[in-house]
Every structure is written in C-alpha cells, then in structure tokens.
Length: 60
Ligand SMILES: [Zn+2]
Image (cartoon, rainbow, N blue to C red; front, side, top):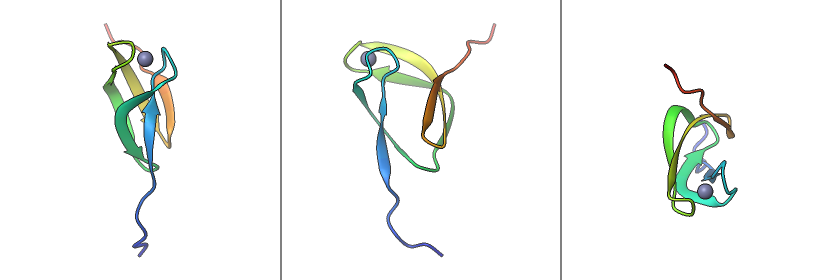
C-alpha cells in the first residue's frame, strides 16, 4: 500500500485562469461541482476527472 502523502493541486478558474481556493488530489473526481472563483466572484459548474477540469453542461 502506498503510504506517501498525496499530491494536491489548486483548481484553476475557467473564466480568468487564476487559482481558486479549491484543492484536489490527483485521484479526485468532481461531477457538477459548483466551483467558486474569488477573483471573478462567480460560480462555475465543473467536472474534474484525473486533474482535468471541464465546464459541466447545465442540465435542463
Ligand atoms: Zn475566475
């Protein structure tokens, strides 16, 4: 079993590309996560899989 501490990364904002206050690990999975950016003061719905962040499609 791997006991090494997991690396963590700050999620970037998809609007302004600056770092948000949300931290993930390399194996973190987020679906339809409301990511708040303190720089734009906006919330963006995102999916995060294997450190790749993409804008979530809003469901109607
Ligand atoms: Zn932003």
